[in-house]
Amino acid sequence: MRHESKPNPKPMAYTTITRGFEAAAYPKIVRELKDSNLLVKQKALIAARELLGSSTSYVQCIAHGITPAVITLLQDADALVRERAAGTMEYLSVKEVGARDVVQHGGIQQLVVQLQDEGTAVRDAAYGALIEAARFDVVRMALVKLRKALPLLMNLVLEEKLNRSLKGLTLLNACVQVRNNQAALKQLVDDAACVPSLSQLISCGRHEAIQEQAAQLLGLVASTFTDAKLEAVQTGCVPKLIALLDQQNNVLLATAATAALMMITIVNDGKYAVINCDQGLERLAGQWMDPMVSELVCVNITQCITNVAEAPEARPVLIECGAMERLVAIFEGVAVSEIVKRGAAEAMRQCKFNYLPHQRLPGREKQS
Image (spheres, rainbow, N blue to C red):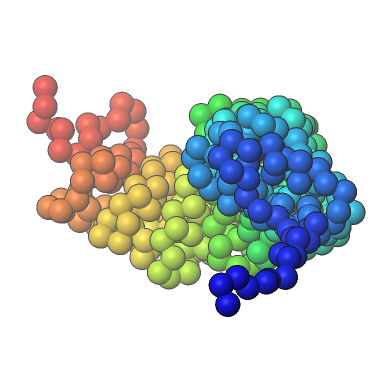
């Protein structure tokens, strides 16, 4: 047969999502996100992520208003839509232009609300989006301006299960591990009463990843506020931080613990908390005081020893437990960096201190 009859093509279902051609794709995806049909919204959120994965499409989607459309879906009655909307917010926040757009349209506030969503998958997605967005200063400032966001996060860290507690601590650290962090730290200390909470989180029996993130945050808080240092001593943080040094082979945990101890031992109460801790000085000057294991941990410990040795009671104990011999070995080591050697020299001088003026640092005695 020269011609063959065929049935008419069947039209696509209304809920079918197809990508528009070139410039038509961007207003089309926004219309589909605003559609009243549940299945269309669910599929459109997946299609939106595909578009946002392209640099060119990313900018065009934002220009055509995809951000407010996705933020609106965070309040949808359907849990799957809320989950996918929160996940799409993470895609929107990968670049600063998107993060700024999210802040401008109130997306950060809505994501904070979703941290208490009844759906665990929605909460997970909201944490992911906030952690991604918190890389940018504009988002961190927005979280601080909400006033209730950081205290809420601190409470949720204590209440949630392991994976979300860890995400919460990661987000809190992202908000304060930056240059302009005074407002965030002040909120954590004054409004969230974070020091007792962090004392719980570094306790024995907690997961090491939780202990590490909590110790990091404790060190940052204690680095700024004297009251936080004193509160850390009062809530029993010092013995718990020293106990973290007993856990072998976890360099990140040891780094966080020694950094926090370094800040807390600036005040006299912190020094005597180490002295009065069971074998506190001996454990401080133990296995981690080795630059071949970790130079950063070693520097932190030498500074801790310098701080604690300002108390007269600590000096004979440090000498008797072999800390001086280790410090001398570090100072005379061939493959040791100058920063570590300088830290060891400071600690040696403080351990041998009797009266003012201070002796010259080891290695500088002959300098004029």
